Length: 284
Image (tube, rainbow, N blue to C red; front, side, top):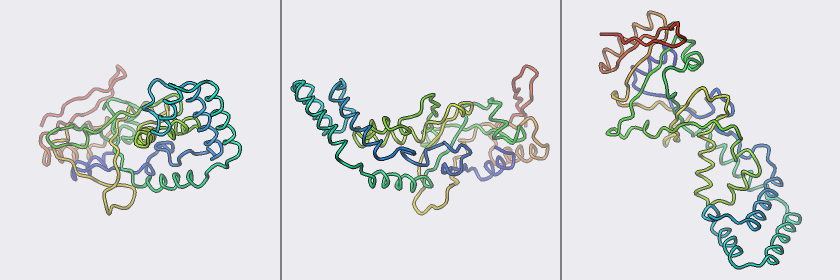
């Protein structure tokens, strides 16, 4: 963070949780569900998924909705190939004669749009030594990095942090076939999968961030797209001052740390000739 933000964080002992609307990555947390996927494409993908399940039933059917699971298990155990063929033919006819349900998909999208401002996400980098993060987020080496503790006795929210995944392949929420899998899952499992794919995956271009994040939603009666929540002082651990930080900002941060949270260790950061940062503990 910038030096001015670090001063605010240390003085107030708060961190800002934000909606994805505040993020610099426009692809972080899908703003639109099933974007670019038409109801007809979705219906076609679901029917093809159903046919595939009949033709090649999975060993583990617990990943399917209860009614679908019953059909698949029954046909797997007892049905002849002739019956399976008839069911598949009927499914294909159903695809041709029944128009896709556009209203259900739009209702789902509207509900998701309403949730986006309510998300509250707190992101961390797993290391204080990532050079690109210093440049992009710490005011081009003029800012600071604050390290935090995850403490069990405080039931710290930071204990819920999970690593972000940066998959090469697009998650299921971006393809008709992926949605067909979600729509044939048990509801709770589908919602959890949808939530995890939206909240804990980013494109590979952002992999340098090595991000961990805590994901939640705004509290009752909170408006806007950000919330500032307090931490216990003991959750603050170390502060690393940027190698190009202004002397006045350095003095301010050291003073705040010394006067309000004496346990915090403060480090000056130097640009080493071995192409690494060197961190020097500032003795009080």
